[in-house]
Image (cartoon, rainbow, N blue to C red; front, side, top):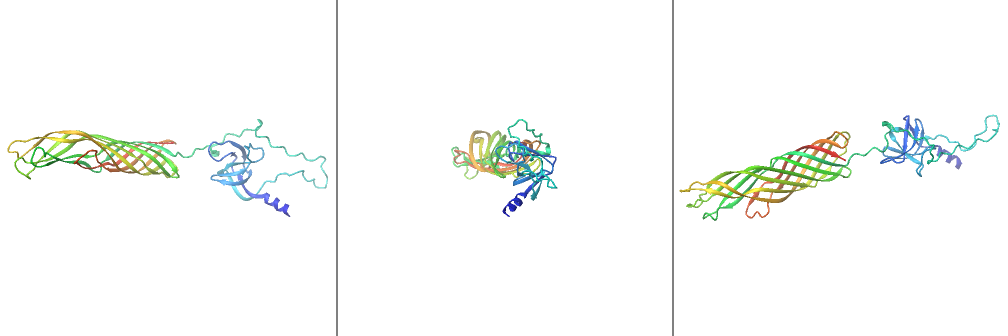
Length: 362
């Protein structure tokens, strides 16, 4: 009875039936792999387990072996048959033919499998496109974006400074408006996945522009208290430069096809350098009811501010590793300068940015 149970259990097991004309069995389901065997349509194979898009199967006799008796076949090339009937394998001499006559000589034993290192083994044919093996590369995980961008500054940069206290009996002020940081900039960002669709990266932006500033002054009257005189002046082009460095946390969902999407949020550091107005030259005459600004003196200031940068990026891949894309970013940080003394500064680095450029994935 025990023998009958063992025989029955060995005859019924999970199997797969090959559904294509030729299917390849590989030594592993991913990475660089080698072909262990080629099987024809309707071949039945014993299944050990399923591994993703592959079945781990027992190798048929005569297969190349790398110290194992199993390999991997694509699930798309077979039909799974749970509890299927395994093909019978001769286990000894055949039964005598009907009529009781014994054979003249015993049946010869089945031929031994050809060793895997023999040179007489027929090499498997090159797989067709339908039989693409595990050498297929996985999707790229890392990227580099190179963009030209146009940005709209969020707020104007202004500075207000107490002035003229050494020339008059009371204090006046000067206020300079340097405008918004609007214009073209360069943006670079790179990174990659570290866990599923989540990744990290680093970004860099550079903005530089020269524009005139608007200066207004409230100048004390030399004869009367609390009767300041107003004057205004437009400066020559003054340089403003801004460098941003940000460290994004990325969400990069996997989509089939050429369209790729990325969303990120990042802490950001902005270094701003400004050619700032430090003094104004005045022109006035009796009865001193009016005053004019005839020129300004400038000095270079710089400082680093901490803020944030967020954005969304859409890429269209022309090839596996090269494509084009567009993005929208928004960054902000309150500008401050070193050694600014009693100067009041208002304004933000960053702004709303529209980007377009090259996408490279690897």
